[in-house]
Each structure stands twice: as C-alpha cells, then as structure tokens.
Length: 130
Image 1 (cartoon, rainbow, N blue to C red):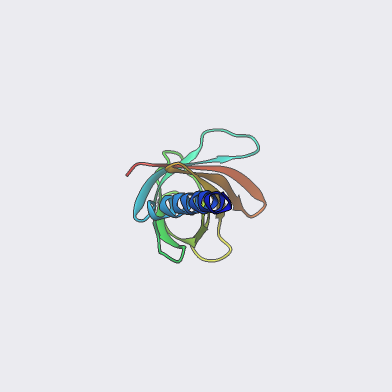
Image 2: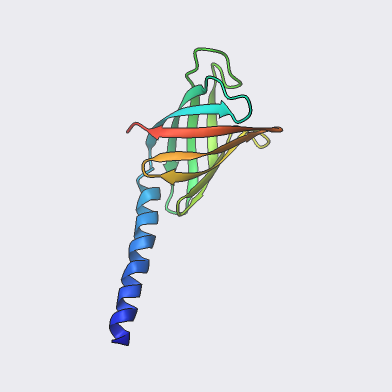
C-alpha cells in the first residue's frame, strides 16, 4: 500500500514539473501582442509586439516593437529583451540595464504581470498570437 501511495505521489510530481516545463518550452519563438497600462490612472494601454525565445536553461531573449498609435516611451523603437524563466515565472528587461523590466507569470498561453519603470508601475499583458 505504501508503495502505491509513493508511486502516486511521484506521478503527481512528474506531472506538475512536466506541465511547468512544457509551458516554458512552448514559448520558444513565440509571438505576442502586448498591452502596457499605467497602474495608477489607467487609460489607453500602449501596445506592441513581443517575440520571445527561451533556452533549456531558462534564458530569455527576444525583441519588443512598439505598435502604439499614440506616442509611448518605446514609440518607433525595437528593443532587445533579455531575462530568465523558471517554472511559471518569467522576468525580462527592455534594452540595456536600468531600462523597464517585467515580472510576470504564464497564464496558459499568455503572460501577465507588472512592468516597472523608474518609479512607476504598469499592468503588463501579453497575449500569444502564434
């Protein structure tokens, strides 16, 4: 009986770890439409396109290109994105160090979290398109 309980527990752990790994692995070369909204004051979100690749070691690389009609801090720019990922968590920064950074989690195919820029916080949502 103890052996059966241990086997069941082991299978559950493997299933959870496999789900986290597959969520991350599924994001290699993934494309997203992003919305970045100021946490205080709200308003119309800045929009952009995000492309991410995640290595087997959890290293995040990609690019972000502004698609906003109205000017935003990234307007007309393509920014390099670098960071890391573990399980369902992901973090990355735009451009060189000291630039805006995102702390987020995977929610199904999407990424939801907070972007930090200087002293401001923004809601960050990236919906996967491919």
